[in-house]
Image (cartoon, rainbow, N blue to C red; front, side, top):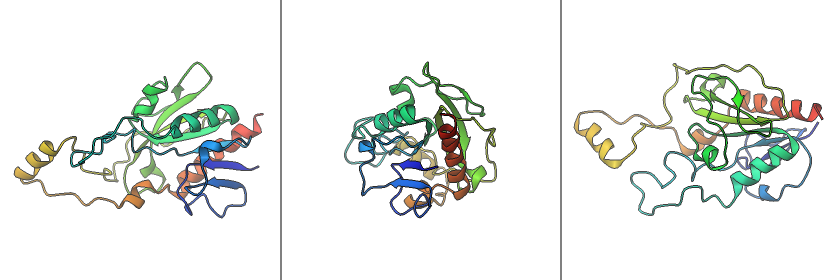
Length: 207
């Protein structure tokens, strides 16, 4: 069974697999019109906590301005079945009428179309950070995941919401935490990739 992996990192963990059709930066996943079950990782920069560029940004961005990538990924998953991944607290959920999942874990109904959503931390599956993640799945089996916080992992960043907050922390003597590289932040652990692929394959098998 072939799984279409949409909006994935070029040359990353979804490449060189015999049963995966990867759509990285060299292919426009918005144009996907096949019928394979989907694993989708639409870009999250304009949907996350720092959608405006963060406290040090010189140019303010527009929330949700991703060129229609999330909307396309959601439509593909709904059409073909499978699973979509985005960072925890993604503004895309509210913008597309999806129910927020509980932080503690567990699948809950996401919409009136048969979709389900949950919050899971990728640290349980090998990521160096906790990396809380929201999933949206439809027409697929919903596996029991490793719920709750992964307490032996760090945050992806220091968690400041403004430059002033960061400066107050420095003035109080809080030393900067070591951050992961951008690539490390975005990389999907092999175990988590395989979990998402298994969800997608269950969608294909149910049709």
